[in-house]
Amino acid sequence: MNKSMIIALSLGIFLLLSYDAMYVVNEGEQTLITQFGNPIGSKVTDAGLYFKVPFVQKVHYFDKRILKWDGEPNEIPTKDKTFIWVDTTARWKISDPLLFLQRMGTMNRAYSTLSDNINGAVRDFVTKNALVEVVRSSDYDSSFSQSSEKAAEEEVVEVKVGRDRFSQLVLTNVSQTMGSMGIELLDVLVKRVNYSNQVRDKVYTRMISERQRIANLRRSEGEALKAEILGTMEKDLKSITSEAYKTSQEIRGKADAEVTRLYGQAFGQDPEFYRFMMTLESYKQVMGANTRLVIDSSSPLYQYLKAR
Image (cartoon, rainbow, N blue to C red; front, side, top):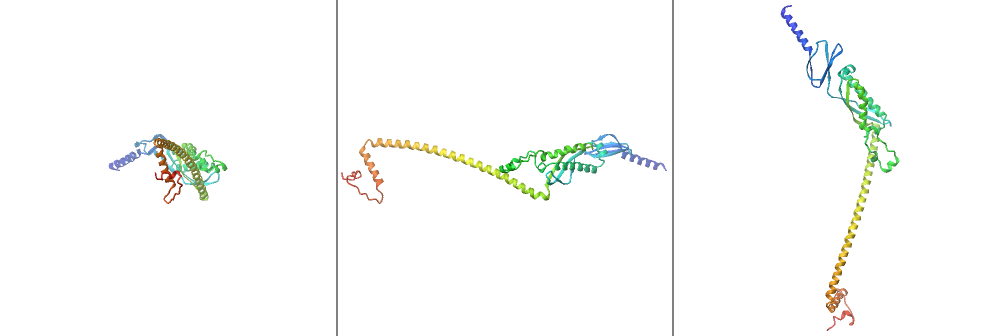
């Protein structure tokens, strides 16, 4: 072997050792170094170029971003024997790479473990609770969904947990188990709750009936309020009309009294002229367009028709 071959071989070995001694941590990654299967040092979370002992130490890469788990819809019976489809999703991240490496090993196993634990917690909750606990919120006011007659016949169902706390209970139950495997479960969300084909038509009919009861209740309340408003308006209108009529009669009475006083004052100055005017007024009242009047010569109506 000549000198040039030795130099080339040495250079190749050096480059190979140098290449295996360096590793890069990208953004969104974290790494852990093991030597013969045993962890060396702490996890590396900052992006950059790092070094290790070539061929002896091994780099394990883990995602440090928030990851999404999306489960398959499961058909689960409730406590009141109603079959529903529950579709859930969750967000999680690798909080302890060493525990994750020791307990999980691969991402596929992590997803499988998440599916088993979350689906198990969801199934456990659904089978131990009635349908209303899964589909209604804890602040749902069931008194609005029933008419007064219906409420008297049926017992109002109280929602103790509700759909809003359902996800939180599942998260609490699963978090401790997954934490021991190096996984931090951030949240669990029920994406969709749907009824099975066997009960869907029946449930839809009940939902329509419930909405109709609410509509009838609101309509009857509106009609009662309308009647109250119209009654108050009618009462106020009659009161205003009565006061206006009273005031007009008082004004008219004062005006008539004043007219009478003025007439009396005016005609009192000449009583004979007053009698003459009154006689003319009587002619207007007694005689019409096609009236023929026959009177005695001694009648008061005739006294002003006689020749003077």
